[in-house]
Every structure is written in C-alpha cells, then in structure tokens.
Length: 96
Image (tube, rainbow, N blue to C red; front, side):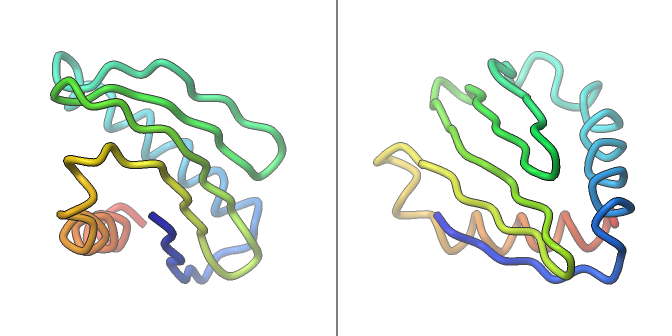
C-alpha cells in the first residue's frame, strides 16, 4: 500500500504531531495491536505491528508538505486496501 497525505505543517512540526498522536493512541490500541517495531530515523518511522493476527510492516516518511506511507499488507487485507486507505485518511485529518 502506498499512500500520500498532504499536511500544512513544517516538517519538524509534522514529526512532532505524528509522535504525539501515536503516543495518545497507545491506550486505545492496548490489547488489540502489538507493536513490534517503532523506530524513528530522522523524519522516517519504520514500524511493524500485529493486529488481529495479521502482521503489517512499513514506513512513514514525513516530507515538507506530505506524509508518505508505504506498508506491506497481508494477502487477506489487500482486498480491503481502498477502505484501509480511506480510513487512514479520515483518521489523519482528525488527529492533525
């Protein structure tokens, strides 16, 4: 899955907002999502997690004017890729 989401922040502000949003979401994800990797290198987040027994890996690149998400979805989720993308877009708009 490859998704680009525009934002209106500086790159540094956008990274800070993503980190804060992830931290705020942890209590809601408890018991539903097992984070296996969450590593920042500059403006790039590398992640891996398991949700509902499905393993998802990828990166989130915070660029000057957009977020770029590249994620490897399990075969079962690929048929729902469009819906997943729309849900992510809606969540990002409410979080940021």
